[in-house]
Structures are given as structure tokens and as C-alpha cells.
Length: 327
Image (tube, rainbow, N blue to C red; front, side):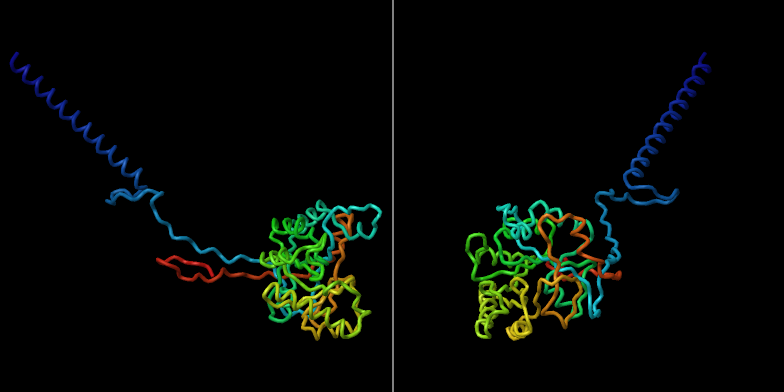
């Protein structure tokens, strides 16, 4: 009995020791597994320290390739750019006024036209962009278009301008300083606000919108020079773009416009092709009230062919504490 009990005791101790060893092995393996899950996988047999979690790891950004964008490269002597001619953006208040109806694009139609331009890949620019293309050899975006608004009606500020801001579209407003503050026209403060917006370029449309072809040289010069001087005093910068009232011009008027210091002038003659030599008689595309969207697009004609250009991001300027600030 004694030998049998001793043998049984030894077996129990051995079994207990094996059990303890198994438990310790399992626990050790579990601990290793937890470290692997926390730090990521690693090669078998290689001792590695715990790695930080994905959330705490700082990954260096991979520089993106410069985007490819279609542009009209500089150097072409003549390009096709539609200069759209608007007057009122309103519902014509008098159905019997046929001219008023023809000059009035409803707010709904105007919004639809801007939506279609955006969806069609058109890029509204201003006269400064055209001048930079011909003089400074700066490229233009693909499918450029100029949105011009004659006479300085208040509905441009109240209706058209918010729609333009929604799309980030540029526009040109040809204003008549002698009409500032009259019923139906913008005030000087509204014109200044448009200029400050950075998306509306202000152009001259004479002092009080006369037929320039019927004026003697003295009064003609006053209309051209006084309107420009008034706008430059109001806005605090040069005004070099002009629009002939009612599109009326002759050789004497064109010569006076050049002498007054204007660099561009627009007419009401139809057309979309422009060059620098004819900059004082650039044609436009009149937008009539009630026209169908298909007719609107047909008047834009075939877009100027564009090339694919690689645009690079602006160079970063070192900022405080090692940060970077774009210029």
C-alpha cells in the first residue's frame, strides 16, 4: 500500500506540473498574440518592439501629379470667344413693350443659362483676361466666354450678381455714371461693391448714354473722358474697357475712344472672333428675352480649340513653426 500510494502521488505531481506548464504556455502565446494584434504582423523568429497603432502613425504625404487642364495657349492672332450681351435680368413689366421684352432675360432663364454654361465646361472670363492673352501671352481656360451687362440696371446687382456668385462666374458691367441712383439703376455704392467682389469688372458706357456718332468732338471727348475719370475716382484703379451706347460708332468715335485711353471697346455687331488689332470694335452675341436654350447654345458657335496643359501648384512659402503657406 505504501509503495502504491507513493507512486500515485508522484503521478499526480507530474500531471499537475504538466498542467501548469500548459497553462503558462497558453498564457504566453496569448500575450504574444495581443502584441501582434496591437503592433501589426512581423516575421517569424524576429524579435521586434511593439509598433504604434495606425491612428497614431504619421504618414508622409505622397505628392500628387500636377493636374492636366485644357487651355487655349497664347500666340494665336485670332481666337473665338463669345462675348454675351445682356441688358435686363427681369420679368418685363409691360407686355406691350416689345423692345423691353427683347432686352429682358427672366431670372429663371438666366439661371438656367448659367447652369448650362457650367455643365458645358464653359469658363467666364473678363476683358482683363483677354488683354492678358494678347499682350502678356497668358493662356485662357478652355471654352472661355465673357458675360457683359449693359447700362448698369439695378437688377444686375439684385438678381444676376447672386447667380454669378453661386457659380463663381466672372462678368463685365458697363455702367453709366450719370444714371447712378436713378430709379431702376445701380447706385455708386453698389457699383463699388461689385468692383470689390473680385468677380465683376466695371467698364465705361459714357456719362449719359448718347448716340456718340451725332456728337461734335468736344462733347464726344467729355462723354468718353469724364465717364472714365468718374469711375476711376470711385473705384480707385484704372478703367480701360468701354462699350458703345446702342452699338453706334464710326471712325471718328473709334479714334476718340483710343485717344481717351481705352484698351478695348465692344459693339453690338454679331460675331465671336477677336484679335488685338480690332480690340476697339469687338463683336458680341446678343442674348434675347425668351430665347430657347438650344438657340442660346447655337449662338456660342464652335469653341476655340484647346490644348492640354500641365498646371503646377503654387510654390509653398515657409510659414511660422515650419508650416507652409500658399502665396
